[in-house]
Amino acid sequence: MIDSKVLAKKKKKKGIYRETAKDKIFNVFNITFFALFTFLCVFPFYYIFINTISDNELVQRGLITFIPRGLHLNNYIVLKNLSDFGKSIWVTVSRAIIGTALMVVVSAFAGYLATRQKMWGRSFWYRFIVITMYFNAGLIPWYLTMLNLGLTENYLGYILPGIVQPFNIILAKTYIESIPKEIEESAIIEGAGTLKIFTKIIWPLSIPILATIAVFGAVGHWNSFQDSLVLMAGRPELYTLQHRLYVYLTKTSDLRTVMEGNIISRYSINERIVKYTISMVSIIPIMLVYPFMQRYFVKGIMLGAVKG
Image 1 (cartoon, rainbow, N blue to C red):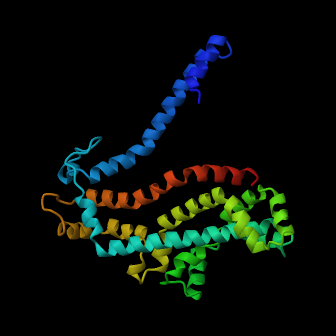
Image 2 (spheres, one colour):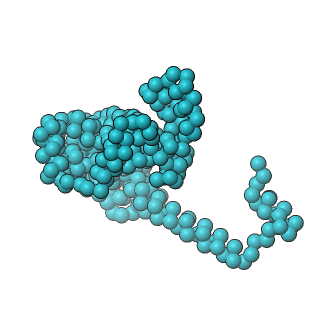
Image 3 (tube, helix red, strand yellow):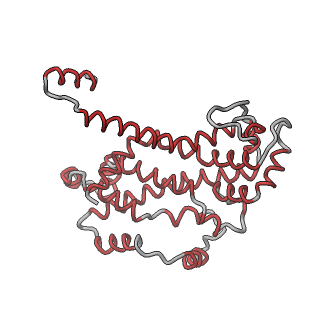
């Protein structure tokens, strides 16, 4: 692979390409702008993280700004030992996995059915799903509906309402329409049914958009707060991680007392440390998803959005 700088030099020698002063100024401005923008995005996370692993006394005095000092992990160790915190992590992780998996399957299948011309009432059902994107009944009707369905104080209340997402179905439908029809027609001629075509042809060819939908679903489930706050008020053991963090943040002094009883005496806890630590615990896991899904995410969202 020829290095771009080498290629530019060769073109420059041949007189094919010559970087003008305006190009240089633009490149300098471009690099500076995006470097500054990246720094502004990354630094808050870095700042919070180094404060959670630095000496608590130095953090309390505001002496930790760019470089961590007095490294230790006791804040995370003590937080991990809180029993209700572990339950909330389990609830959040399980709903993220189960809810995302079901959402991806339903979105892909509904999107595929919406592309089949022979499907009964195809246009009506597709428009019926899409119209829900524009009209929302509000919190109280939603709660009453969940109450009548028996989904309050019920773990299924996290899973079932999120399975059908109109936006994800639109993405899947648009992407599947880009797959050549000849492939499906060949499978039909050979006797394949709808389900076999979906599982053997459509699903494998739709991995990029399915990965994109999976990222949307996982992030949504991980950050979900309102459903836990409204639906699970009477069952603390079903609180999600975000709801548990909200409880901790509103009762920081109580949590600090609990944590101080579990930690080495020289690492005194303060409210700032508590907030920083629980914030990082909620952020780090979901941030680790993107590096593994990025190549599918970019390809899927571009192809799924072009014809939308």
